[in-house]
Image (cartoon, rainbow, N blue to C red; front, side, top):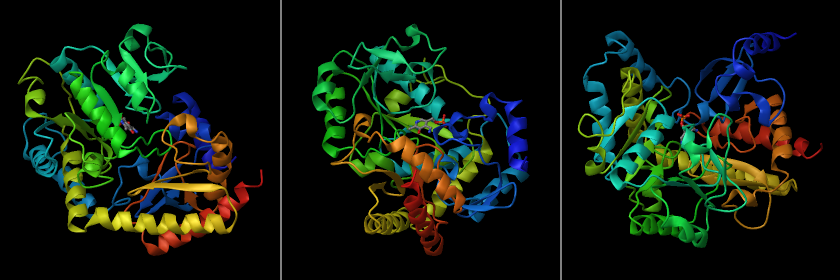
Length: 425
Ligand code: PMP
Protein backbone atom coordinates (compact mmCIF):
# COMPACT_ATOMS: atom_id res chain seq x y z
CA UNK A 1 0.00 0.00 0.00
CA UNK A 2 1.36 3.45 -0.88
CA UNK A 3 1.41 6.17 1.74
CA UNK A 4 -1.38 7.88 -0.20
CA UNK A 5 -3.53 4.74 -0.07
CA UNK A 6 -2.86 4.40 3.64
CA UNK A 7 -3.96 7.97 4.26
CA UNK A 8 -7.12 7.51 2.23
CA UNK A 9 -7.90 4.30 4.07
CA UNK A 10 -7.62 6.21 7.35
CA UNK A 11 -9.67 9.09 5.94
CA UNK A 12 -12.47 6.67 5.07
CA UNK A 13 -12.63 5.71 8.75
CA UNK A 14 -13.04 9.33 9.80
CA UNK A 15 -15.04 11.27 7.19
CA UNK A 16 -17.92 10.35 4.86
CA UNK A 17 -16.28 9.16 1.66
CA UNK A 18 -12.94 10.15 3.18
CA UNK A 19 -13.40 13.84 2.37
CA UNK A 20 -14.69 17.09 3.84
CA UNK A 21 -16.29 18.33 0.62
CA UNK A 22 -17.64 15.94 -2.02
CA UNK A 23 -15.77 17.01 -5.18
CA UNK A 24 -12.46 16.29 -3.45
CA UNK A 25 -13.30 12.60 -3.64
CA UNK A 26 -12.55 11.43 -7.14
CA UNK A 27 -16.11 10.26 -7.85
CA UNK A 28 -16.24 12.25 -11.07
CA UNK A 29 -13.01 10.76 -12.41
CA UNK A 30 -12.49 7.49 -10.52
CA UNK A 31 -9.49 6.39 -8.49
CA UNK A 32 -8.09 7.48 -5.15
CA UNK A 33 -7.79 11.17 -4.26
CA UNK A 34 -4.24 12.48 -4.05
CA UNK A 35 -3.21 13.80 -0.62
CA UNK A 36 -1.43 17.11 -1.02
CA UNK A 37 1.07 18.24 1.59
CA UNK A 38 2.29 21.66 0.49
CA UNK A 39 2.03 24.21 -2.28
CA UNK A 40 3.87 27.20 -3.67
CA UNK A 41 3.15 29.51 -6.62
CA UNK A 42 1.49 27.48 -9.41
CA UNK A 43 2.53 24.16 -7.88
CA UNK A 44 0.91 21.77 -5.44
CA UNK A 45 2.96 18.89 -4.02
CA UNK A 46 1.67 15.55 -2.82
CA UNK A 47 2.68 13.62 0.29
CA UNK A 48 5.31 11.69 -1.63
CA UNK A 49 6.96 14.92 -2.80
CA UNK A 50 5.61 14.86 -6.37
CA UNK A 51 4.76 18.34 -7.74
CA UNK A 52 1.80 19.17 -10.01
CA UNK A 53 0.93 22.34 -11.90
CA UNK A 54 -2.31 23.29 -10.18
CA UNK A 55 -5.32 24.45 -12.24
CA UNK A 56 -7.77 23.78 -9.42
CA UNK A 57 -6.34 26.42 -7.06
CA UNK A 58 -8.60 25.45 -4.19
CA UNK A 59 -11.57 25.76 -6.59
CA UNK A 60 -10.84 29.37 -7.41
CA UNK A 61 -9.76 31.53 -4.46
CA UNK A 62 -5.99 31.53 -5.10
CA UNK A 63 -5.84 34.13 -7.85
CA UNK A 64 -2.23 35.02 -6.92
CA UNK A 65 -1.20 31.37 -6.65
CA UNK A 66 -0.25 29.40 -3.56
CA UNK A 67 1.50 31.15 -0.67
CA UNK A 68 1.80 34.48 -2.39
CA UNK A 69 4.29 36.56 -0.34
CA UNK A 70 1.98 39.58 0.07
CA UNK A 71 -0.88 37.41 1.30
CA UNK A 72 1.46 35.45 3.50
CA UNK A 73 2.72 38.67 5.15
CA UNK A 74 -0.83 39.91 5.72
CA UNK A 75 -1.94 36.61 7.26
CA UNK A 76 1.18 36.50 9.41
CA UNK A 77 0.58 40.04 10.65
CA UNK A 78 -2.95 38.96 11.60
CA UNK A 79 -1.58 35.99 13.50
CA UNK A 80 0.79 38.27 15.36
CA UNK A 81 -1.91 40.78 16.30
CA UNK A 82 -4.63 38.27 17.16
CA UNK A 83 -6.81 36.04 15.01
CA UNK A 84 -10.30 36.49 16.33
CA UNK A 85 -11.83 39.20 18.45
CA UNK A 86 -15.59 38.98 18.16
CA UNK A 87 -15.59 42.78 18.37
CA UNK A 88 -15.38 45.73 16.02
CA UNK A 89 -11.90 45.94 14.47
CA UNK A 90 -10.32 47.97 11.65
CA UNK A 91 -9.45 45.04 9.34
CA UNK A 92 -12.91 44.18 8.04
CA UNK A 93 -13.59 47.91 7.78
CA UNK A 94 -10.59 48.30 5.44
CA UNK A 95 -11.76 45.44 3.21
CA UNK A 96 -15.37 46.67 3.22
CA UNK A 97 -14.25 50.15 2.19
CA UNK A 98 -12.09 48.72 -0.58
CA UNK A 99 -14.98 46.69 -2.00
CA UNK A 100 -17.49 49.53 -1.71
CA UNK A 101 -15.07 51.90 -3.46
CA UNK A 102 -14.52 49.35 -6.21
CA UNK A 103 -18.05 48.11 -6.86
CA UNK A 104 -20.65 50.88 -7.25
CA UNK A 105 -23.71 48.68 -6.67
CA UNK A 106 -22.40 47.56 -3.28
CA UNK A 107 -23.37 50.36 -0.89
CA UNK A 108 -23.40 48.20 2.25
CA UNK A 109 -22.13 44.70 2.82
CA UNK A 110 -21.95 42.03 5.49
CA UNK A 111 -19.08 39.58 5.80
CA UNK A 112 -19.76 35.88 6.38
CA UNK A 113 -17.57 32.78 6.22
CA UNK A 114 -18.70 30.90 3.09
CA UNK A 115 -20.40 31.42 -0.24
CA UNK A 116 -23.27 29.26 0.97
CA UNK A 117 -23.93 31.65 3.84
CA UNK A 118 -23.64 34.67 1.57
CA UNK A 119 -26.28 33.40 -0.87
CA UNK A 120 -28.60 32.10 1.85
CA UNK A 121 -28.47 35.47 3.62
CA UNK A 122 -28.88 37.56 0.46
CA UNK A 123 -32.04 35.64 -0.40
CA UNK A 124 -33.40 36.21 3.11
CA UNK A 125 -32.92 39.95 2.58
CA UNK A 126 -34.52 39.78 -0.86
CA UNK A 127 -37.56 37.96 0.49
CA UNK A 128 -37.91 40.43 3.33
CA UNK A 129 -37.71 43.33 0.89
CA UNK A 130 -40.24 42.05 -1.63
CA UNK A 131 -42.52 39.99 0.57
CA UNK A 132 -42.30 37.24 -2.02
CA UNK A 133 -41.41 33.77 -0.85
CA UNK A 134 -40.43 32.12 -4.14
CA UNK A 135 -36.96 32.23 -5.66
CA UNK A 136 -36.07 31.56 -9.25
CA UNK A 137 -32.79 29.83 -10.01
CA UNK A 138 -31.34 28.45 -13.21
CA UNK A 139 -30.74 24.86 -14.16
CA UNK A 140 -27.18 23.73 -13.52
CA UNK A 141 -26.26 26.75 -11.40
CA UNK A 142 -24.83 26.00 -7.96
CA UNK A 143 -25.26 28.46 -5.14
CA UNK A 144 -23.99 26.54 -2.13
CA UNK A 145 -25.85 23.96 -0.10
CA UNK A 146 -28.69 25.88 1.56
CA UNK A 147 -31.81 23.69 1.40
CA UNK A 148 -33.97 25.76 -0.98
CA UNK A 149 -31.17 25.87 -3.55
CA UNK A 150 -30.39 22.17 -3.68
CA UNK A 151 -32.81 21.74 -6.50
CA UNK A 152 -32.47 20.67 -10.07
CA UNK A 153 -35.03 21.02 -12.79
CA UNK A 154 -37.26 18.13 -13.76
CA UNK A 155 -38.22 17.74 -17.36
CA UNK A 156 -40.12 21.02 -17.46
CA UNK A 157 -40.10 24.37 -15.75
CA UNK A 158 -41.99 25.69 -12.72
CA UNK A 159 -43.70 23.16 -10.55
CA UNK A 160 -41.64 20.30 -11.80
CA UNK A 161 -38.67 20.37 -9.49
CA UNK A 162 -37.13 17.66 -7.37
CA UNK A 163 -34.56 17.95 -4.63
CA UNK A 164 -30.97 17.12 -5.56
CA UNK A 165 -30.21 15.90 -2.04
CA UNK A 166 -31.68 13.49 0.46
CA UNK A 167 -32.66 15.32 3.62
CA UNK A 168 -34.04 18.32 1.76
CA UNK A 169 -37.78 18.18 2.27
CA UNK A 170 -40.35 19.06 -0.32
CA UNK A 171 -41.40 21.90 1.96
CA UNK A 172 -37.90 23.36 1.83
CA UNK A 173 -37.92 23.51 -1.95
CA UNK A 174 -41.60 24.28 -2.40
CA UNK A 175 -40.81 27.90 -3.23
CA UNK A 176 -37.90 27.26 -5.57
CA UNK A 177 -38.58 27.59 -9.25
CA UNK A 178 -36.03 26.39 -11.79
CA UNK A 179 -35.69 27.84 -15.28
CA UNK A 180 -33.37 26.75 -18.08
CA UNK A 181 -30.40 28.96 -18.85
CA UNK A 182 -30.34 30.96 -22.08
CA UNK A 183 -34.08 30.79 -22.78
CA UNK A 184 -35.96 34.11 -22.66
CA UNK A 185 -39.35 32.58 -23.46
CA UNK A 186 -39.17 29.99 -20.68
CA UNK A 187 -38.11 32.72 -18.26
CA UNK A 188 -40.91 35.07 -19.31
CA UNK A 189 -43.45 32.31 -18.82
CA UNK A 190 -42.68 32.01 -15.11
CA UNK A 191 -41.07 35.23 -13.90
CA UNK A 192 -44.31 36.89 -12.83
CA UNK A 193 -45.05 34.02 -10.46
CA UNK A 194 -41.71 34.03 -8.67
CA UNK A 195 -39.66 36.08 -6.26
CA UNK A 196 -36.00 37.08 -6.35
CA UNK A 197 -34.08 35.80 -9.29
CA UNK A 198 -30.69 34.28 -8.52
CA UNK A 199 -28.08 33.60 -11.18
CA UNK A 200 -24.35 32.94 -11.32
CA UNK A 201 -22.52 35.81 -12.99
CA UNK A 202 -21.07 33.27 -15.39
CA UNK A 203 -22.49 29.77 -14.85
CA UNK A 204 -19.35 27.83 -13.93
CA UNK A 205 -20.53 24.90 -11.87
CA UNK A 206 -21.69 22.67 -14.70
CA UNK A 207 -18.78 23.36 -16.96
CA UNK A 208 -18.24 26.92 -18.10
CA UNK A 209 -21.36 28.21 -19.85
CA UNK A 210 -20.63 31.84 -20.81
CA UNK A 211 -24.01 33.58 -21.01
CA UNK A 212 -25.29 35.85 -23.76
CA UNK A 213 -25.16 39.46 -22.61
CA UNK A 214 -28.69 40.07 -23.98
CA UNK A 215 -30.06 37.13 -22.03
CA UNK A 216 -28.58 38.44 -18.77
CA UNK A 217 -29.97 41.91 -19.43
CA UNK A 218 -33.32 40.42 -20.33
CA UNK A 219 -33.67 38.48 -17.10
CA UNK A 220 -32.45 41.41 -15.01
CA UNK A 221 -35.01 43.77 -16.59
CA UNK A 222 -37.93 41.30 -16.49
CA UNK A 223 -37.15 40.42 -12.88
CA UNK A 224 -37.42 44.05 -11.84
CA UNK A 225 -40.51 44.62 -13.96
CA UNK A 226 -42.12 41.73 -12.08
CA UNK A 227 -41.38 43.46 -8.74
CA UNK A 228 -38.66 41.00 -7.76
CA UNK A 229 -34.95 41.54 -7.13
CA UNK A 230 -32.00 40.56 -9.28
CA UNK A 231 -29.44 38.72 -7.14
CA UNK A 232 -26.10 37.96 -8.72
CA UNK A 233 -23.99 35.12 -7.34
CA UNK A 234 -20.40 36.24 -7.92
CA UNK A 235 -18.83 33.71 -5.55
CA UNK A 236 -16.67 32.39 -8.43
CA UNK A 237 -16.64 35.42 -10.70
CA UNK A 238 -16.27 38.28 -8.18
CA UNK A 239 -12.75 39.80 -8.29
CA UNK A 240 -11.89 36.97 -10.71
CA UNK A 241 -13.27 37.71 -14.19
CA UNK A 242 -12.59 41.41 -13.63
CA UNK A 243 -11.77 43.68 -10.70
CA UNK A 244 -15.47 44.41 -10.38
CA UNK A 245 -16.66 40.96 -11.40
CA UNK A 246 -19.08 39.56 -13.95
CA UNK A 247 -21.57 42.35 -13.28
CA UNK A 248 -19.12 44.88 -14.68
CA UNK A 249 -18.03 42.51 -17.44
CA UNK A 250 -21.63 42.29 -18.65
CA UNK A 251 -22.72 45.81 -17.70
CA UNK A 252 -25.24 44.64 -15.08
CA UNK A 253 -26.30 46.39 -11.88
CA UNK A 254 -27.52 43.74 -9.45
CA UNK A 255 -29.76 44.61 -6.50
CA UNK A 256 -27.83 42.20 -4.28
CA UNK A 257 -24.57 40.42 -4.92
CA UNK A 258 -22.73 37.52 -3.26
CA UNK A 259 -18.95 37.16 -3.07
CA UNK A 260 -16.58 34.49 -1.74
CA UNK A 261 -13.44 32.69 -2.93
CA UNK A 262 -11.00 35.37 -4.26
CA UNK A 263 -12.06 38.03 -1.72
CA UNK A 264 -10.74 35.88 1.16
CA UNK A 265 -7.35 35.20 -0.40
CA UNK A 266 -7.74 31.47 0.34
CA UNK A 267 -9.12 31.89 3.87
CA UNK A 268 -12.79 31.40 4.81
CA UNK A 269 -14.34 34.75 3.97
CA UNK A 270 -17.37 35.72 1.90
CA UNK A 271 -19.84 38.59 1.73
CA UNK A 272 -23.22 39.69 0.56
CA UNK A 273 -24.07 43.26 -0.24
CA UNK A 274 -25.97 45.66 -2.43
CA UNK A 275 -28.22 48.69 -2.24
CA UNK A 276 -28.15 50.42 1.14
CA UNK A 277 -31.94 50.36 1.52
CA UNK A 278 -31.91 46.57 1.10
CA UNK A 279 -28.86 45.86 3.25
CA UNK A 280 -30.17 48.11 6.02
CA UNK A 281 -32.86 45.49 6.52
CA UNK A 282 -30.16 43.29 8.11
CA UNK A 283 -29.85 43.08 11.92
CA UNK A 284 -29.11 45.10 13.94
CA UNK A 285 -30.07 47.89 11.49
CA UNK A 286 -33.23 46.03 10.47
CA UNK A 287 -35.42 42.98 11.06
CA UNK A 288 -33.58 40.33 8.97
CA UNK A 289 -31.53 38.21 11.34
CA UNK A 290 -28.09 37.02 10.30
CA UNK A 291 -25.01 36.53 12.49
CA UNK A 292 -21.71 34.62 12.73
CA UNK A 293 -19.16 33.92 15.49
CA UNK A 294 -16.20 34.01 13.10
CA UNK A 295 -17.66 36.42 10.54
CA UNK A 296 -15.12 39.00 9.30
CA UNK A 297 -12.31 36.91 10.73
CA UNK A 298 -9.23 39.18 10.67
CA UNK A 299 -6.95 36.62 9.03
CA UNK A 300 -9.31 36.30 6.05
CA UNK A 301 -10.00 40.04 5.99
CA UNK A 302 -6.33 41.00 5.87
CA UNK A 303 -5.40 38.22 3.44
CA UNK A 304 -8.34 39.19 1.23
CA UNK A 305 -7.41 42.87 1.17
CA UNK A 306 -3.77 41.99 0.45
CA UNK A 307 -4.94 39.83 -2.47
CA UNK A 308 -7.06 42.59 -3.97
CA UNK A 309 -4.40 45.26 -3.46
CA UNK A 310 -1.72 43.05 -4.96
CA UNK A 311 -3.91 42.26 -7.97
CA UNK A 312 -4.51 45.99 -8.46
CA UNK A 313 -0.83 46.92 -8.05
CA UNK A 314 0.24 44.24 -10.54
CA UNK A 315 -2.51 44.98 -13.07
CA UNK A 316 -3.46 41.39 -12.31
CA UNK A 317 -6.76 41.07 -14.12
CA UNK A 318 -5.54 42.15 -17.53
CA UNK A 319 -2.31 40.19 -17.16
CA UNK A 320 -4.27 37.08 -16.25
CA UNK A 321 -6.69 37.54 -19.11
CA UNK A 322 -3.82 37.95 -21.58
CA UNK A 323 -1.97 34.91 -20.28
CA UNK A 324 -5.09 32.78 -20.25
CA UNK A 325 -6.04 33.62 -23.81
CA UNK A 326 -2.49 33.00 -24.99
CA UNK A 327 -2.44 29.64 -23.18
CA UNK A 328 -5.89 28.51 -24.31
CA UNK A 329 -5.29 29.66 -27.92
CA UNK A 330 -2.16 27.51 -27.92
CA UNK A 331 -4.07 24.55 -26.49
CA UNK A 332 -6.87 24.95 -29.03
CA UNK A 333 -4.56 25.06 -32.02
CA UNK A 334 -2.48 22.14 -30.78
CA UNK A 335 -5.61 20.05 -30.09
CA UNK A 336 -6.76 20.89 -33.63
CA UNK A 337 -3.40 20.04 -35.14
CA UNK A 338 -3.50 16.68 -33.38
CA UNK A 339 -7.03 16.06 -34.69
CA UNK A 340 -8.54 15.99 -31.19
CA UNK A 341 -12.26 16.87 -30.90
CA UNK A 342 -11.76 19.09 -27.85
CA UNK A 343 -12.94 22.67 -27.30
CA UNK A 344 -11.41 25.01 -24.77
CA UNK A 345 -14.00 27.42 -23.41
CA UNK A 346 -12.56 30.54 -21.78
CA UNK A 347 -13.72 33.56 -19.90
CA UNK A 348 -11.06 35.78 -18.43
CA UNK A 349 -8.85 33.53 -16.25
CA UNK A 350 -11.31 30.60 -16.17
CA UNK A 351 -11.22 27.80 -18.72
CA UNK A 352 -12.97 24.49 -19.30
CA UNK A 353 -12.02 21.67 -21.66
CA UNK A 354 -14.91 19.80 -23.20
CA UNK A 355 -15.77 17.47 -26.05
CA UNK A 356 -16.38 19.33 -29.28
CA UNK A 357 -19.93 19.97 -30.40
CA UNK A 358 -21.59 22.28 -32.91
CA UNK A 359 -22.38 25.75 -31.66
CA UNK A 360 -22.00 27.41 -28.29
CA UNK A 361 -22.92 25.50 -25.17
CA UNK A 362 -24.89 27.81 -22.89
CA UNK A 363 -27.11 25.34 -21.08
CA UNK A 364 -26.51 21.98 -19.51
CA UNK A 365 -28.57 19.92 -21.94
CA UNK A 366 -26.18 20.95 -24.73
CA UNK A 367 -23.11 19.49 -23.05
CA UNK A 368 -21.91 16.58 -25.21
CA UNK A 369 -22.80 13.16 -23.78
CA UNK A 370 -19.22 11.89 -23.93
CA UNK A 371 -17.88 14.59 -21.60
CA UNK A 372 -17.83 12.60 -18.35
CA UNK A 373 -16.08 9.45 -19.61
CA UNK A 374 -13.58 11.42 -21.71
CA UNK A 375 -12.71 13.85 -18.93
CA UNK A 376 -12.06 11.01 -16.48
CA UNK A 377 -9.42 9.69 -18.88
CA UNK A 378 -7.98 13.16 -19.52
CA UNK A 379 -7.80 13.89 -15.79
CA UNK A 380 -5.70 10.80 -15.04
CA UNK A 381 -3.47 11.26 -18.09
CA UNK A 382 -2.85 14.87 -16.98
CA UNK A 383 -2.20 13.80 -13.39
CA UNK A 384 0.36 11.26 -14.59
CA UNK A 385 2.10 14.14 -16.43
CA UNK A 386 2.20 16.42 -13.41
CA UNK A 387 -0.91 18.55 -14.02
CA UNK A 388 -3.66 18.72 -11.41
CA UNK A 389 -7.07 19.55 -12.93
CA UNK A 390 -10.22 19.87 -10.80
CA UNK A 391 -11.37 16.25 -10.35
CA UNK A 392 -14.73 16.55 -12.13
CA UNK A 393 -15.83 16.79 -15.78
CA UNK A 394 -17.94 19.82 -14.83
CA UNK A 395 -15.60 21.86 -12.63
CA UNK A 396 -13.72 24.70 -14.29
CA UNK A 397 -9.98 25.36 -14.30
CA UNK A 398 -8.40 28.56 -12.98
CA UNK A 399 -5.16 30.39 -13.68
CA UNK A 400 -3.26 32.46 -11.15
CA UNK A 401 -0.67 35.21 -11.54
CA UNK A 402 1.90 32.63 -10.44
CA UNK A 403 1.26 30.67 -13.67
CA UNK A 404 4.07 32.23 -15.66
CA UNK A 405 5.01 31.61 -19.29
CA UNK A 406 7.34 28.73 -18.50
CA UNK A 407 4.76 26.97 -16.29
CA UNK A 408 2.08 27.41 -18.93
CA UNK A 409 4.33 26.10 -21.71
CA UNK A 410 5.04 22.96 -19.67
CA UNK A 411 1.34 22.62 -18.83
CA UNK A 412 0.36 22.91 -22.50
CA UNK A 413 2.84 20.16 -23.50
CA UNK A 414 1.50 17.91 -20.76
CA UNK A 415 -2.16 18.57 -21.56
CA UNK A 416 -1.75 18.00 -25.29
CA UNK A 417 0.05 14.72 -24.66
CA UNK A 418 -2.59 13.77 -22.07
CA UNK A 419 -5.39 14.56 -24.51
CA UNK A 420 -3.77 12.42 -27.24
CA UNK A 421 -3.66 9.50 -24.83
CA UNK A 422 -7.18 10.16 -23.52
CA UNK A 423 -8.51 9.50 -27.04
CA UNK A 424 -7.49 5.86 -26.72
CA UNK A 425 -9.82 4.30 -24.17
N1 PMP B 1 -22.01 30.07 -5.34
C1 PMP B 1 -21.21 29.66 -6.32
C2 PMP B 1 -21.37 30.24 -7.70
C3 PMP B 1 -20.21 28.71 -6.07
O1 PMP B 1 -19.43 28.29 -7.07
C4 PMP B 1 -20.06 28.21 -4.76
C5 PMP B 1 -18.99 27.17 -4.41
N2 PMP B 1 -18.27 26.65 -5.41
C6 PMP B 1 -20.92 28.68 -3.76
C7 PMP B 1 -21.88 29.61 -4.09
C8 PMP B 1 -20.80 28.18 -2.36
O2 PMP B 1 -19.65 28.65 -1.78
P1 PMP B 1 -18.97 27.89 -0.53
O3 PMP B 1 -18.47 26.60 -1.05
O4 PMP B 1 -17.92 28.83 -0.04
O5 PMP B 1 -20.07 27.69 0.48
